[in-house]
Amino acid sequence: MGKAIAAFVFLQLISICSPWPLSRNSRWIVDDASGQRVKLACVNWASHMEPMIAEGLEKKPMSEIARKITASGFNCVRFTWATHMFTRPEYRSLKVSESLDRYNLSAARAGIATNNPQILSMTVVEIHKAVVDELGRNKLMVVLDNHIGRPGWCCSDNDGNGFFNDRDFNPWEWERGLITATTAYKGNPAVVGMSIRNELRGSRQNELNWYQYMRIGANMVHNENPDVLVIISGLSYAGNLAFLKSQMLDNIPSNKSVFEGHWYSFGIPDDIWATQTNQICASVSKAIIDNLLFLTQGDNPFPFFLSEFGINERGDNEADNRYIGCLLAAVAELDLDWALWALQGSYLLREGTVDFEEVDGVLDINWDRLRNPAFLDRLQAIQHINQDFKSNHPTYYKMFHPLSGHCVQIVENGIVVANCNNASKWEQHQDDGPIKLVGSPQCLGVAGDGVAPRVSEDCSSKWKYVSSSGLHLAAQGENGGYLCLEMNASDSKLVTKKCLCVGDDLVDLSTCADNPQAQWFKFIPSNIWEYSDHHVG
Image (cartoon, rainbow, N blue to C red; front, side, top):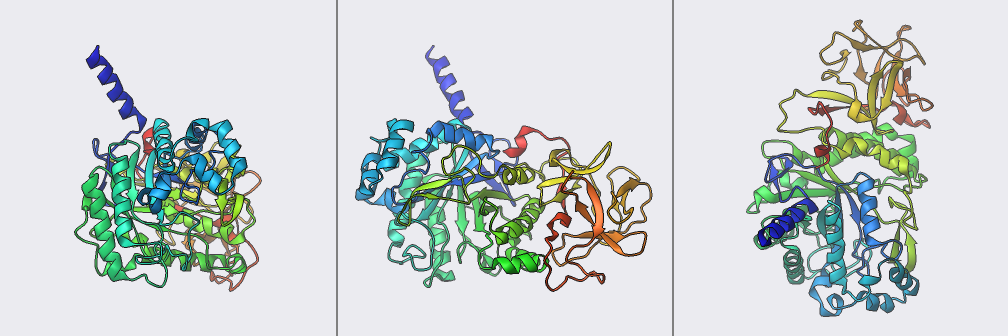
């Protein structure tokens, strides 16, 4: 009987979160046991603010939040923590009730008493662990992110948390925090990775210290727990790892190392995005490739984890609305691992405001429902594996439409943009050549302005990229002028129309009031011929 019980307990632990542990194989993250690729499709859940309590526990039971994460298509949570919570007695010994009282969060205290009464007597470290355990019970992988030193909102150049030897960023204390947190979660099958520092920045940042401390941190984590991935961020708010082109970070646990970075619309005004969408997409995509995504290429590629991106999910930030299509095209093409910012619809306390609404949150301010279900639907194409390095199937291409998050699919009554799991399979497209179906003599052809394209054995239509974004596909219509593929918003059918924000000379208009994203398409490689659940890792 004792052996049977032990075997049952072991199987239960395995089922909490599988696969585990993970490692690096070239540019991919893989399950150690099977060698199969695992894709991180995560959402960020904040627990690094002043109260040091996972956001939302005053709104909903912990188990309900975890179930909502799974139901939303995520297989992973990037769960944040602050160094001081693990290093300073006055922080780590605080009970949840005491932390709430410290900030006069009486309404939140009452909410937790209703939704999660068992946690009020826990310390802030204990509730952090309890959340991770609950995520594991829901078969969610967890990446623990050292988000900040002193608990609070992140990030700015002068917040004292930006770089080593800033006011609240003592290197020795950071090292001790990493060791303590890694030890605390050692053996927990939910925890698959440790992100050793978020968004290094500020006037003190420099490459010499970056190499020094990233090497120290990576090895400290690995020596304490060789099972977890060690996730390493760059400089300039996790926007720059370009210096690795000249000198790779060496003497680190190579088979466990992953690099991470962030990509937001910050820094470019709404009106510039709205009037120069193609040009801005081209320039920011080039910068992201040069500074971050180059790591997935070359003779010694590494996995790259896009650990933060996101938009104002109310839809009223035009820069966000334009940038996200540009980002999705790149993420889909490279089949990146990623983490959306953010799960939380609200914060207990942010920058002095109680119950602060997070408009980038997947959930609404009351944590009742999805803030923007249509946006989550746009992520479905990147939630599943498209490139499996162990597949024996040949590579084909899906025609991805970033604005909808769907792919071109031939159906009985025409050509539509629909779920990418059933996308039509195309051969690799050469610029100014035909777009051909795999294993078929048929091609995609232009029929006329405002008319659906045809699929036939007439392969005379030569399709070329006609904007700086590289996302417009155009071919000459019957009258000799160029027409671009476009998704018709009313019925999701494919049509060809005059190219938006592109002149008759096929050159970008300097400014354009139209939104060209309905005409954005990207060929994304795949060798997955039949969808199955293992694609989400």
